[in-house]
Picture 1 (cartoon, one colour):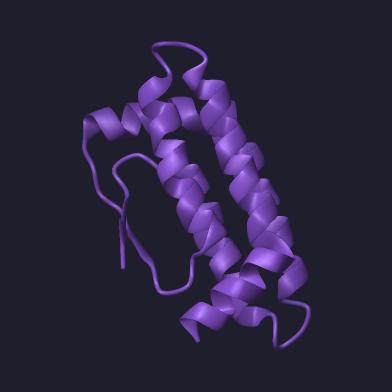
Picture 2 (picture 1 turned 45 degrees about the vertical axis):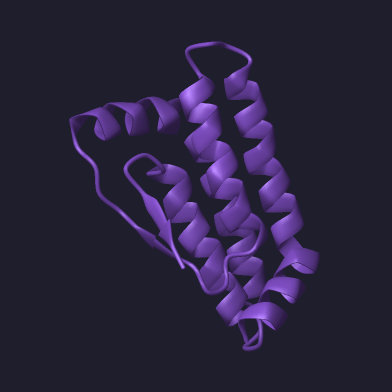
Length: 120
């Protein structure tokens, strides 16, 4: 299911979400201070392009909390709204529910990316 799911995902929604993460990474990398945040965006863009077979583990400390707060204010909310809306559209049909669940996973990640790791 992973390879076929990723292919269908990429065609019907993953491409748009992955490009959004890449754009956010490029905008953050314009400033020297934002480069670590932009690199995190690039890492999660790969998850947005191909999420099936991958899991997100959340953790982190005080530094992650501060970066997550800054992230939510500037970039996280638009990415989370985009992923949630696409997820709701996918969940209209029974066949689309697994794809909608992947969107909701990415929406949660868009709100708390720092301190998170991707596990295969």
